[in-house]
Length: 522
Image (cartoon, rainbow, N blue to C red):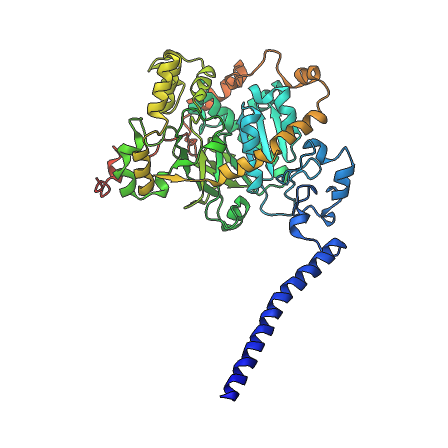
C-alpha cells in the first residue's frame, strides 16, 4: 500500500514539473523574442508592414534603388508619402516611386488595346485591375473625354500605358491601311454609329499589333473599357499564368463573355458594385440553357442584351491581323484556336441608367425602327436608342428596370441555382481594394504634381484636329482613297480571308438545330 502511494506521489510530482515546463517555455520564448525585437535583432512581419512604415512585400531595400526605405519615407517630403497625402492606412503596393512595374523578364508579356472615350472614373479601375492580374502594357486609342487634357495627362503618367490620340496624322496613316484594299471588313465601311466604331476599332487593332511587336509583347487582347478579363481556373487569379499554360501551337484563345446582371437602378461604380453575371452558352449545357431561356431573356430580344461571342487573345506572330473587334486572324494561315472552359470576359452591359442616354448622344441616327438598323448591329441596342430618344425620364427608368435590372429575387435565386446566373466577387474585391487604398487618387495627384504636358495650347494644336473630333467615316472620303475599296468591292476575285466577326447574339430559342434534346426541363 505504501509502495502504491509512493508511486502515485512521484507521478503527480512529474506531472506538476511537466506542466510548469510547458508554462514556462512559451513565456521564456516570448520574452526572448521581445528582447530581440526591442534591440532590433528581429523583423516582425506585423510591425514590418505596419501602417507607419508604408512598406509592403517586395519593397525591401534589396528590391532596388527605386523603392524608398522606411526611414526615408518618414523624412523626405518629396517621396511617395506626399503623393498619398502621408496616409498611415495600409495601401495597395502602387507608388509613384515603385510604378507597379511587372518586370520585363516575366513571361508571357501581355498587352491590351482599346478604343475609348471614357473618363477616369471608368478607365483607372479598368487599367489597374488588369495590372493586378498580369497585364503589363496598354495601348489606349483615345478621343472625346478620354483625350481631354485632364484625363489624358493622368493616363500618360501611368507606367506601361501608351496613349494614342485621334489626330489628323493618325487618320491619314490609317487611310493608307491595307484593310481598305481588302473585303473582309468592307461590309462595315461608310456606315454610322456602331459600324463606324467597328471599323475604327479594327484599324486601331492593326496599329496596336505593330506597337505590341515593337514592345516585345507575347499576347495581345482587344477589350472595351466596360469589360474585365476573369482568369478563372488559375491558382493565383493570374492572366499571365493562364496564357503561359496555353500550348505553343495555339495562336488564339477565345474568352466566352458573361454579361452583368445589375440588381439596382442606381449603380454608380459597376466594377465595385456588380457581382451577378449571366453565364455564356459555351459554359452551360444545352438542357440548362434552353430549359431556362424564357426566364433568362425576360422579354428582351435575346439571351444576352448585347453580344455573346466573346473576345480573343492572339499570340504575337508574323502576318497577324484583326478580324473585327472580337477576333484575330492571320494573312498566311487559319489560326489554331481554343476556347477556354472556365475563364471569361465580364461584360458590364448597360450597368448604369445613364448608359441609355450616353449611347444616344454618341449617335445621330433617327429613332425609327428602320433607321436604327443602319446604325446598330444588335436588337437591344436599337431598342435602347429608340427609348432614350423618344421617352420621358420616367418612362426610360421604367423601361430600364423592366429590361435591365434584376429585381425579382425569386427568379434570381432560381437561375443562380440552375447555373444560368453566377456570383463573381473577385473583380469587385480587387477594385474596391484599389480604390480604398488610395491607388486611383494617388495616381491623379501624382499626375497633377508632375505635369508632363508642356501646355494646353501646344497640346491642342499638336494633337487635336482644328475641327474637333474626327469620324472614321472621313477616312478615305477623298476621291482617290474611296476609289480603292470600291474597286475591290466591284472585283470578281474571291477573297481568301473570312469576313470580320461582328458582335453576335447567343443562340436563340428558334435555333432548332440546337434544340434536339434540350427542352426537357420545365
